[in-house]
Image (cartoon, rainbow, N blue to C red; front, top):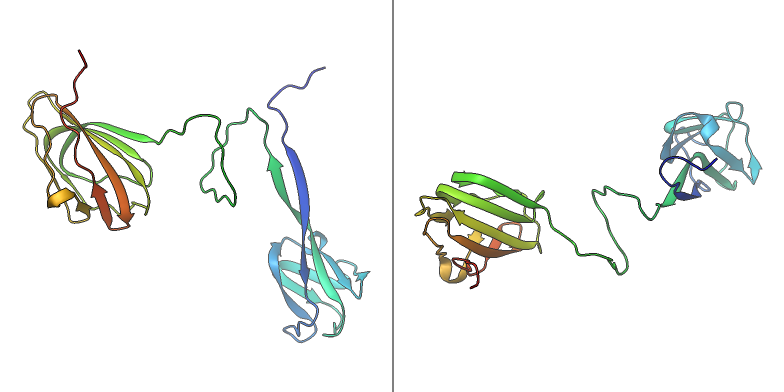
Length: 223
């Protein structure tokens, strides 16, 4: 019978190890601090001079505390293996959809398809508007009144994107900013014609300095 469900991922387990040789302990020779938390002594293999100790008889363990029930000298070869918490490196199936919050790469990243930044779209904007740079890269804002881009707290150094500004059916909607936004010459001018579409590129120089490029004004269909 064929396998039903999502394709299985390949998992390769690497068991964690901690060397306690030379550690005095607290209490001396009996109490030791583990680098990783364990549920009980059965999740931990303890070796003294390369002899495995019996759980609950030679030692107890809970959380990050290892308690030896006999003295361990600082000259003893003393180490533990975290048998109950193998750390896995998973190679997901080719067709798997992954949700990753943070990703740090030590090498090159090659993508088979184009990368699309998340775009925020709002059809009604008036007064103070705070852009969420942590969630979105690009913004499409329809202006229904005068708008002030308020100082955000979510921008990240090096982030780039665009802001599309659309005048509503009445037009004459102005745009101003708080002091974390910078523009060429210290001013920004946008279209005010009804239904006009402008594009403003941005680059984050620092967490409190967002550079706005010169607006590309009044986009229209090509004849």
